[in-house]
Length: 357
Image (cartoon, rainbow, N blue to C red):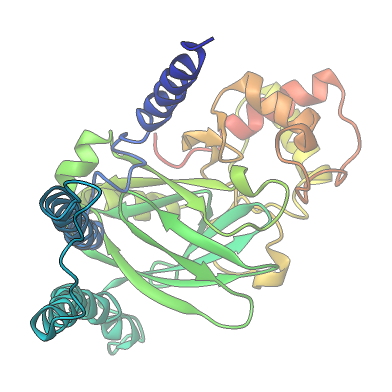
């Protein structure tokens, strides 16, 4: 019986160690910064942690010294009675002020630096910006990414060049969400009534370490599938980004199915899905008409619905019952039940939607 509390404590620490061991992946962890913003925020975390640990250490040492030096030696002894000390009072007032200044100065400086989005508002003679701007729109439970300069709209996978600032306009189409790429920088809310702006930068070395793919998440409780509202970030070189841009811009009309099965799948898509999903990247339809993710490059993506493996089996399972994988999603009940033959054909068509050969 006496050993049971110790075993419980050991079990608790073991569980904590297992949980914390999953927090260090380079594509997801805020403790492994992958860009200027993340590095700045990480250094501020280290600074604040060092100050807090230092204060705890000093207070603990003073507590132990006082406990040992001024303890009562016997029952007849009365410890020295100290009513106050002006020096100590000044000391423990000045020290916290200095510590706050040490923390406040770099925090305020970083805040103003990270809030500088003036470049994204400056237009050149063509009416475009000289920097890369991405309009992010959050919906239940998916993400849309619009590149206004490039006249491209895509979804679920954000493609960005490394080693340069990428500026974001953030908004939501239904309820409040929050845009967060842990490895690249802190979160920022997406609201329905205003646009938030900020910038991120993706380091090429960190991107290589993460396999060129970072994870993004919604960080604001928005509904039953909030935890499943993921997106992926492909961080590539500027040359690769330009190639991707040209490939997307080259798609002027829906891709033609090459096989008989894919052709049948395209018919199913046109009858059941095209009312919500576009298969061309041009920014022609208004936002209210873009009620589902853009599928132009669906075959090039790394995930299905943001959370499932990019495989034919998982795609079929998603098409059969979206509610099972993302409760409360807007796709549920939008089309009639499909036969196995129709599912196979639609799957082949969707997997063939590629812009990069």
